[in-house]
Length: 487
Image 1 (cartoon, helix red, strand yellow):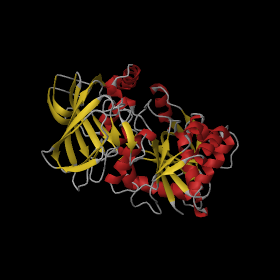
Image 2 (cartoon, one colour; image 1 turned 45 degrees about the horizontal axis):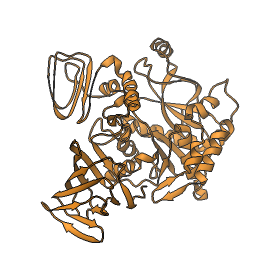
Image 3 (cartoon, rainbow, N blue to C red; image 1 turned 90 degrees about the vertical axis):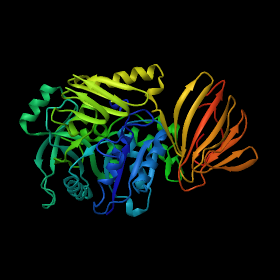
Image 4 (cartoon, rainbow, N blue to C red; image 1 turned 135 degrees about the vertical axis):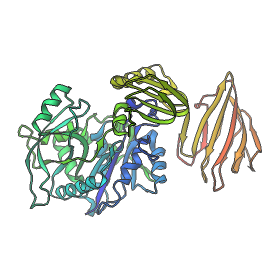
């Protein structure tokens, strides 16, 4: 029986600002190497028996990021389900289960491996063995959580209290019944739970049949099941993307997998269910990388307890982390601090106050600061652009167009543009004319002129664009044709 990975890539990661932004969120950050956490989530599944290409659930705004990050590691997802609005993990998983259920009859009892896209796991071999065990149990109708062996009385995680061992003809002696879930406790309560040796961190990873999830959701949250089914049935496919009906999905209640189903079927006081709720303990070097302090904990530290990345100079610094991404960062005499530098924002915080970064980002959003939404480099399905300089009535951008890609056919009401090719070859459309530009050649696009920029070559096209006019906002784009079906 095939094992369907369902990767939930909807997390915002506001506590990891300024690297994580609304339109370039946490799953696409690179923490331990050059690959993003989303890419690592996919790659750690290589070699799992009967695994099929992943199904990914993400926000509509992140669809091209997901597709591009998958392409970079040679993965072709079987489908990318696009949430028009975030409704938390229970509706997201329901969309995936419905997509599996509507496939051929052989898929109706397919087993789903549900994984957040923004976790770190260092012991992949142990993780894969646990997945195989869980998949065997799920075939018999069980719902399985993965519990992480705690390393500290953390108040950042939920906990699972474990019960007796569960045996399935000897196939899974490590699986245990779940007695109940505990939401994030304070540190004192967490220490008391750890002292009993009966609690695990709740990882947010699950294994179950698609049909099992739909049946249990119908039992406990029929409102979510009905809203998701109607939105899914009213959706449309756009190549690899599937869009549920936006208005119908917006009517779906917000809930998590834990609250909607898991806590209702686990433990002696739960409502009746025929499904055993099990947990498989794992010690796999796991982290949900939920804050800068968590990143510091999973990173290699020097003899003074520091984590240093980028062009950074330090003197007499201890137990601190400094990320320098685009310029020299110098730190002297600091202790227990975290500094993260990006081209347009710098974060400096005490190690013990990293949870407050989320509050800071909420304030930036309230004030409509652009630094909350995007990095200076903004990714698009055709490549990316980066603002180099701007001022009164002008803006200068560096633009990269990937091979074979093209911007939309468009026009502007308030600005003109001057393009200079730095490298590669550009195919330029201006009204009814079309021509090629090579390195060091340029073109001028006047206000109101229909135009398109494309890369017909096999190497990236890089240009410098100078905009001038009375208004230079991105909303002064009238798209006439677009190969990515953007509005």
